[in-house]
Length: 429
View (cartoon, rainbow, N blue to C red):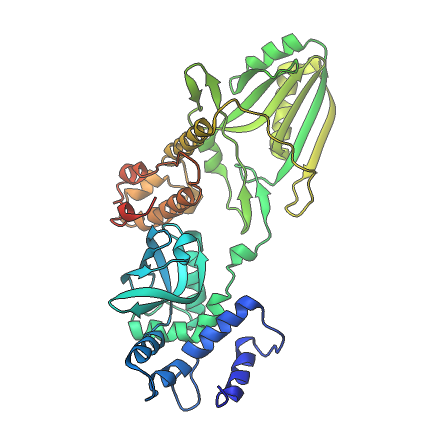
C-alpha cells in the first residue's frame, strides 16, 4: 500500500472529478472496489491483477485474487430469486445467464429488477462481490443511454472484451448514476393527464330528496347509499378507454393518481368494467358537495349540476388546493374500519389488481403509440415493447406481494401470446 500511496491519492481526485472533499461511507466502498479491481496503474495492470501475480500467494489465495481480477461490473437482469440464497441473472448486453450465490442482494430484489454488480467465480459456481446497485425494469432505457454516452454514442458493441472494457472505464460513474426520471421532481396528474389538485365545490339546496333523485337519473353517477351521518354519496364513473385515448404524454417524475370504485353486497363485491372514478358528490340536507383531483373534473361537475339541477342548486364555494409533494400534511387520521379481515382485504386488493389488468389488455396505451397491448402483441415487430411493459407490471406485482393473498398475473402472458419465462417456476415464495 505504501508503494501505491501516491497513485491512491491521484485516483481519489480522479474518482470524484477533482473534488478532494470527504467521501461518504457508501462512496468509500465504491472507490475501493473501483481502485483495486478496475483502475489501471502506471506500467499496466490493476492492483488486484498485480496482487494475483505475487509469488508469495498460496494456491487458494491466488485463485480468489484471479477471480476478483476477472470480475468487471456488468448490468444484469434478475430472472429468478431464491431469497437469501441465490439469484439467476442474465447479462443485459451479452445475454449470458448465470446462477449466483447471493445471501444479501437476493433479499432486496424481485424478478425483472436490474442489478449493476460483479459476478465472480467461486469454486465450481459463481457469486457476487462488492457494492451493487438495484434498478427497476423501467430504468433500462435510461441505463442503456448512459452506457451509449460512455461508449461514444451509437449502438453498443456486444463483443465481450469491448463490454468489459466499457464497464471498467465507467463503472464507478454507473454505480453513482441517478436516472433522469429519478432526479425529476415529483408531480401529480389525474388519469386524464391533467395536473392534480384538491378540487372542491359546494352548493346550497332546498330539497335534498329531489336533488338525490335527479342525480340518480344521471347515467354515469352511481348511488353508493347512506353514509351513516344522514347523507349519501354518488360516485361519478368515466370510461377509462375514452380517457386513455385522449391522454397526452406525461413529464418525467409524473405520478398518475386514480381510483377504482368498488361496490359491496351480499354476493361479494364488483367493479364496473372499464370504469374509473373521477369524483364524488355528497348529498346532505341543505348541501351538495363535490370533490375530485383536477380543475377540469371540477368544471365538468359544475356544468353537470347546472344542467341537471338548475336553480335548485346555488353554488356557494369553489376551491382549488395544490398538491405539493414536499408540503407538510396534517397528521393522518386512522382509516375507518372496513369490516373486512386482513385476508378478506387482501383478496379484494388482489382481485382489483387482476381486474385492472383485464381492462389494460384492450386499452389504448401511450407507451405503444396508442395501440392496445393485445393489438401490439399480435405484431411481431412490437412484441418486444409489450414484453417490456409486461415485465414492469410483473415486477411491481412481485414487489408489492407482501400480504396473505398475492395477485397472480401469470394469465396475462397467455392472453398476449407471450411465453412465460422458464425461470419463473424456480422463484422462491
